[in-house]
Image 1: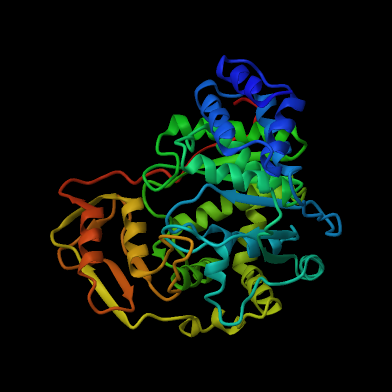
Image 2 (image 1 turned 45 degrees about the vertical axis):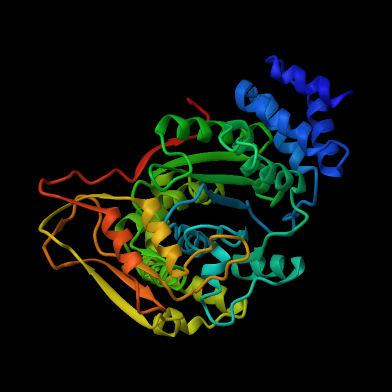
Length: 437
């Protein structure tokens, strides 16, 4: 078997056999296949695509390239959730304790962020003392005891994907649906989930800007999951404006606490209930999403979801008193209002640009080496369709520098105010479960 022949086969529109895909991924992982040949293959895949069987085989070859997390020691059906990313995407902080509170075990492997704001771990580390440096044994014990634990990503998980991801970034092959889908699904499968709920974002602040591309990616990932024996569904949700109001690490933790109290932003609460309901059904704790949703709503109303969050924080060294005293979270030195310059209606909130403004304050990482300021960020006060009066705050900047003219300018350029009423945007566009997609 020669690599050049397999590149030519895919270039000419041929279908690679399972053993050929395994050969390519093994060779690239151990260094016997060089970057330049894998680059040529990635470009051939970008132009020629892959069949559903090829995508599943590629995914499992990357899973088999490294370690796998064994969650067999955790009782119950383990359901994982993955979001394709966005601005103010605080759902994991709400979802994990919410679904754990109704008996669905959440064994979550998360990473640090690169971009607008921190990842789930960065956000949780806003809580004084919280840490994810725990052994696999402690991780499983905490999930069995409390129903929830979060651990940092292992360096030995899907090494083939890490190499291929870095290569795609510099060879203009990032946009390939088969490569995106297999990359995401390989990490989820290697992390040990029995079932997977995907939150696939669409719109300005999402990786996939167009609905057609979003649906194609959702279908590809759901198909891969179901083909390899993981029950998988995808919810397509809006990211043309930030989710919730807060963009920034400690600010998002506070918003998650508010949401678990039933007092958070309506869109964040609604999306958490939607995703959580599917997780509960896949875990076998409810027969349908309607009854699952009722369970989750009751858990919020009774305070059980919030108590689960407190227990989770304390079990991993965090100061759980921040739940009742959010002022103990990191706070910025300067709080600056961004007033509306005219009366009107919010016609648009450019999610990506608002996220970049938060990163300018230090809420995210421009490079892997960047240090995050956990206290800073932006809190919006309006959503698309809301009425606004001149002088009313559009947003609040939380900064550790007094001079924020650059951020203010960016926000004014990101928040469109029009004279005519604007219809509110939909939050969820549909569910892809593989049955009719």
